[in-house]
Every structure is written in C-alpha cells, then in structure tokens.
Image (cartoon, rainbow, N blue to C red; front, side, top):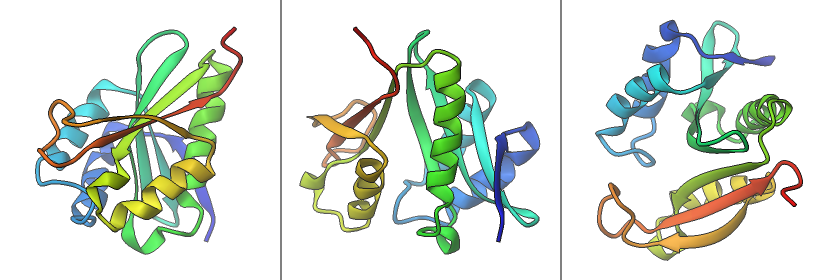
Length: 158
C-alpha cells in the first residue's frame, strides 16, 4: 500500500488520538488528551495509507536550529512496515530545509526493562539518533520511567 506524508490538519486529530489509544503498551491514559492539545500547538505530519492514517509525528520547534520530536506513533497493524521511517524522513527533510540543525527525541530508557520499547530505541538508533543522556526521574513522567535522551545532527553546528 502506498504511504504518503503530509502536514497534519485539525481534522486529523481524532485519527491521531485513535492511533495512540490503539497502543496502550506504549502510551499512558493521559496521552490522548496531550496529543489533541499538541496538535493545535505544534507542527505535525501524518502518514496516510489508502483512506486512513497510519501514523503521525508532532514536533516542537525550540529555536531556529533545534527541535524536539514530541510524539511519533504508527498504528499497531502498520508498525514494522516503513511507515515510521517514511514519516521521519519527510519531516527531517522539511525541518532541515528550514534551517534545523539538531533534532531531539525522548523515549523510555533501557534501564526500565520494558520490552515493548526495545524496538522503539532500535528505530531511533537505526535512523541516526544517538543516546546522549538518561534522566531519572524525568519531570512529568511517572516514577520508574527513566527518559533516554536521543539527538540527531541534521547539519553542522560549528
């Protein structure tokens, strides 16, 4: 099936929230409301396949040259089929063309011993992200959930 990536629009909110709700092993119960709010506040992209959304990403532009991927999720049945990579590649191209040099993402650190996130960390590492730190406890994260801080350089910073 052909996957296309485009900027998210307000009408995509319900589908993005549904993707999160379909992944309870990855997201806590408060995340759907956070996703809905952040889709209104930050640039976002969606991956479409056929007539539905297969995934989405939300980015917080922190400065002219740095941003954080706040959320990137792919619907359960579409995971492992290149949707996340296509989505990431597309948003990285757009952000780099707009002067972005450094991109950050946070995910659950390996110290948590939670199996579902092994594939998540492998995804980021396969796509050029390097873990630079672990923060535990991380503000606003539940206790016992150490944050792995990953970055990717999209351009030269010196």
